[in-house]
Amino acid sequence: MSLRAWCTTAVLGLLVAAAPAGAQTFHVDAAVDAVDDSPGDGSCATFWGACTLRAAVQEANASPGADAIALPADTLTLSIPGTFEDNGAQGDLDIKGELTIAGLGARRSIVDGGDRDRVLHVLPGAVATVTGVTITNGSAPPDDGVDPKGGGGILNRGNLTVSNSAIVGNESGPGSLYEYDDGGGGISSLLPVGTTADPAPALTVERSTIAGNRAVGSGGGIYSDTLMTVTNSTISANESELCNILGCGAVGGGIYQAAGDATLEAVTIAGNKADESATEAQPGNDIGTGPYAALSAHNTIVQRPSGETVGCSAPITSLGHNIELDDSCGFHGAGDRPNTSAQLGPLQNNGGQTDTHAVFGPRPPFAAGPAFDAGAACPAVDQRGAPRPAGAACDIGAYEAGAAVPADADGDGRDLADNCPSDPNPDQGDADGDGIGDVCDPTPYPPAPPPSPRQDPAPPHDQPPPVHVDPPVLVTDSAAPTLSRLKLRPRRFRVRSRGVIFRYVLNEPGTVEIAIERVVRRRHRTRFVRKTVLGKAGRNGANALRFRGRIRRRWLTPGTYRASAVATDAAGNASAVRRVTFRVLRAR
Image 1 (cartoon, rainbow, N blue to C red):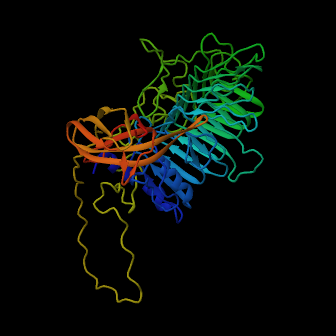
Image 2: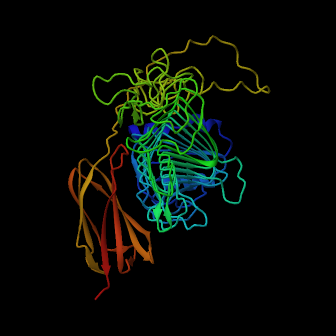
Image 3: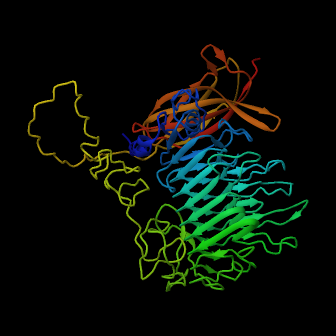
């Protein structure tokens, strides 16, 4: 079994064991984007048998109970176009029930929106958790002015928790001509329009990074009018702008809390930017608040970009031990330091699964900044999982200087106190409660139940002491194969001709599957209709596969087609998808 398969098999075991009847865990094993062949049958499977992320979401929506999806260490790119569809079959992934999407660490499990639509949409009444995942390249469409949405990475109208994840490089409302606020380049958390949802909509962000997102509207990183809590997280280099035919004025380059209560605890908010114009005198480059919002901060750093006017659009409630570059946030509580530079380092990999700003200067001699040992009553660990405090007191912000990040010995991207450090066990499952993780426990199952009272009990006898053995050492292949130089000749051929030859190069033996899809364009929308999947075992080096353009007894009809090729090695590792297009012409 491959390391990837081993890892994903262990994910979320405890969650499933504790979930109500009907709950399921779906293990994604294909990086391609394809729908489930029969949503609701309890099996995550496309028509050729693979479990894709989209198919898993469709099955989870049709399944009762608290379901879970385990992601592999791979980049999963959404490629099926479509907007304003809420069944998960096109565009973004729509979540309707109670669902956890768990990756193997934000640097390893990546969901790429492909710049076609936002990535996730949590519908009213749904409860969603995203953990150990990077969400990137989401692109929410401009709203129509009737029901503003936004949310380039995630649109939440339910109850959403984002933990140990990165929401980076997403965009909301590109090209909008309206003055409506397509806010939340990274995340938009909104109350449902005209309805009362149960549970109440809320957003929780913990130990995560929200960076490099852009909104044509307020809240470059986050837009919220729901209850919101952000803990041990970094919000950096996001941007909001709204200058169109009707005027200018976006608020909150990092966060915009339009209404409702919000709490920031041990958060670093730095380098965010909101457009400044004559119509918006206080844009709040880092934090913007609406007239019906109540925002409080504790152990938090607010550092607007140098040269920009204000960090906060209006004062917020200080719970103490905050730092801001100016005095716009109104930090005047115990331990607060207004008009102070936190001397942050660049946003980078400082250990852990998400990028952070160190609380040291960016150049030697790396003298401690004012956030060092200046916090109070911090969380037990920082954003990276390093223990707090490492000095006389904890540090302000999401980063604890001088603290060692726990080793991730099994490479599962999750370990803090690992009960099975030599093997991948992301869920830390321990079914029999003996302190040894199920993955490496020789006897991982609970003891058998006592005999039925109707049966004679077995005669007593001495039980031999348990024998503890070392777990087997697994030699695993976790390297994905490489499929390169995919070409086909000819690029155009006629019905009932010799067809086409696909040529490609493999770096190791494996099975190659080529999905043939008809490209259907109607007005401004494009669909891909699956026709067949070709399969062939390949050798290391150059390979070729002929396709006559006939499926069973039927020839392909004239038109444009797309071929998507994936190679899978003997250990189950899949390559990146390679695509080419070709045309079928009418017969002479």
